[in-house]
Image (cartoon, rainbow, N blue to C red; front, side, top):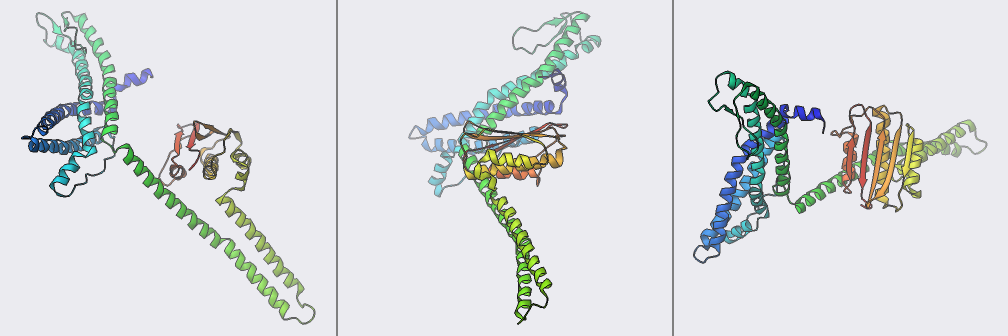
Length: 432
């Protein structure tokens, strides 16, 4: 940790909002703990008796309903003061009839997780409130010289607060002693934001673990999103292929047909020697040239669907790609176990796009491509010595790249400070 960051921490906007969050959350945590634990214990005890079973069920259902409302309140408070948005869990599904509704409430996993959050949050909230108390202690100790000057002295001196819960309260009875208070206040002021930040970090972990959607729900959402991305990407590729075929090879094939048809007409009208052999030769030459250009465009289109260089494996394909790059590229590829064809193709296009971005936008003079296969994952790392500042922006090339690799549960990591260098890592599974 840099000393400058420690000195600036008490005066940052983040520190103030985190302190406000801890100050507002502590009474809510105490109230929620009491309102949740007492009815929960009472309801559980009553349901074990024959006479109080109905009242016990009512208390349990009420606690579960209140837990969902409390979870929504805590998510809103964190979003407003910390700017941290927790994905909401799936909505509650009501059962049929009174018995079905009670059963659905008692089986509501989201509400039970919210109860766990409310009960586990109290010590974390207490730590946050203790950190806020450090702020107050620091400010009071820093102002002790002013209280000394303006008549705050008593016969026993002015009490100097300490951030520790034990150890007594020392009293300052001399003017030089006030400087000790200022030093203690300054040290406490520097430490307070980090104590509050630790409490906020612990609360963040609890909030994401217990108030957000469960692991299975998150996985289902991720699969739905990646499926939609895969469908959209496939549709876009088909449309692009259709447009390229229509605007390129199709037009040239029509020109070939017209040229050959005109040549046939010139030949069909002649019973003897051809009257315009040069014209026929020109038409045949035009048709030949159009056919050659059509073949070239079809090769380019087929290369866009599956690069022929991948037939020999990913390292050889990347070597060909590096040789064709506009930048000098240093390549290191170690792929002992060949991935599936879909992963190889995606890896090839990822490197191709990252090299193209480096050549177009970064002003780099050279690039380094490193491909390794470790921990059952394929890792691609492309670095350049350009100006940096690469970001995932909506509609940008990196955003499209991120969407494509998500379809196979891949990950994208970007390190690109202003001024460079840029290092972008793509992690792909061995099979789609």
